[in-house]
Image 1 (tube, rainbow, N blue to C red):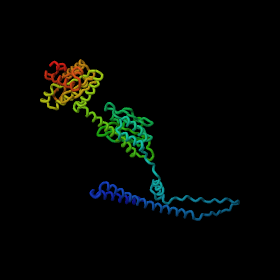
Image 2 (image 1 turned 135 degrees about the vertical axis):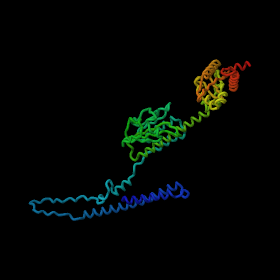
Image 3 (image 1 turned 60 degrees about the vertical axis):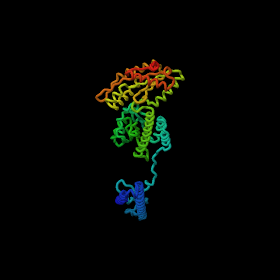
Length: 459
């Protein structure tokens, strides 16, 4: 087919696309427009293919006819000028090779129609996608399996998804300033075990970055790929719900037959997006669990968790015949700060207390926000002297605390009440009641002091 016929076909196809675009959506929905365009392209393609095939058959028939005419032409006879003494064998002139008359009209680089049709009819290699292994990985995610199990399944499926390639999965470690290797696969090393986020261009762009070393295209900006700068590399961010969790890097020297750059980029996108959504979902579950047992302002355990934990600790203490102490505390300057600075200043004070209180207690102690502005510390296995000394330490540390709030300084003292099981109570209710009453007595006596539940028995 000539270039003119192709332009005519392209003109009709584009005309159909434009005409479909201007049809109102009320008559034909968007899905119907796409289907109509596809059907129009298929009809035009079939017509174009039929015409091309017919012309190719005609050209082949003409070529065959010309070849037969050349073969049937009479051969030239040679008559010797001087007769030879001895009989010499006749030497017949070989028939010159017949040149295809259609080769002269083909443009440079073009191939005959018959060869083109043969190539078009030949089955192309199918891209490989291990659906069975990928299905196992997806089921692990849908069942909300733990992170180590999902990563183990991913480590098995990646070599099948990306044959003859090497890869590495990075995730954030203890700090957000570096990415640590979770696992790697392949026969060669492509990057370090730890990298800075800024070393990978996909971190800044938030999209897949392709670096083609074969064509000298190093504009990707992924400087961490310095161990094996060959072939093609793909770097994809592991992200979800506007959060960044890591980077997946794949590198291959040569793409397999039947698979192109776009197909590999699509596979990398599928893996990174699926893993990113799984990690984002895990983070949401953890946050939900944290919010159900922690106070949103101070970050300490809330009252419901405190009462459940205290009840459990009391049962264990009674079973093992060990003591358990509890400290109730109230910031003395809350009312003064609220009247002069507003509730936001009080929230700032409570947040600061919530951040510092865990530093003044033992690792096994449980800091909580009891209600409103009242804090509580549960001390398993602590007798009266240990609980009282800890309360005095907290009172002394907080009395020296100064908090910057704009141009002002926030500070407060504490009123603390102490009760211990089994000295002052026999169950959860009486233990909490004794500590709360002792705290109230400390506040009524001027604050900045620790009152033991023993004082209640002397009233």
